[in-house]
Length: 162
Image (cartoon, rainbow, N blue to C red; front, side, top):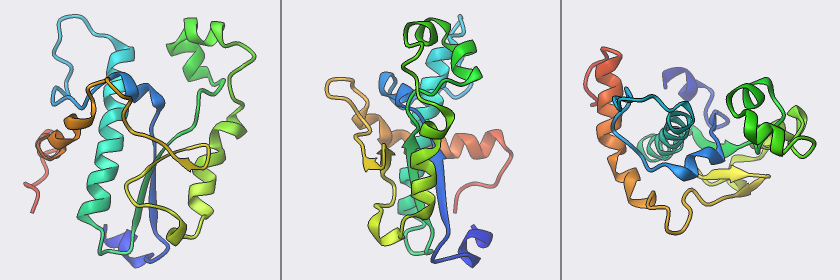
């Protein structure tokens, strides 16, 4: 934060998340202790944590002159998508975004005047997007972010959050 504060009021943190998060609520099981590992589920959980952390940072550091935003690049035709989600990649072959199209919103967020952006917001295609789907049961889960931050600090051997 000290380095970001030095760059204020233009400093910003842009978290590249994913619409994959829509399937999972925020989960305090950061180490994935279920008996059978599911990489797609863990990916969705991690992306949900990223979006909730971005909200948390935006609120916690609201008076520091640093903007915090998260975004979904859309499903782009990358090696990661084809390797991790081969069925999706095959079904959407020819319909996935190019790398340039996937990068559009993150670049746009970096260049927009901060007064046109809403801190803590999730963006998709240069517009505010919902963070939760109706009936997905994810909205109330963001209340867990404080305990998740404490867990991350503990895992990383960092002092407790002031």
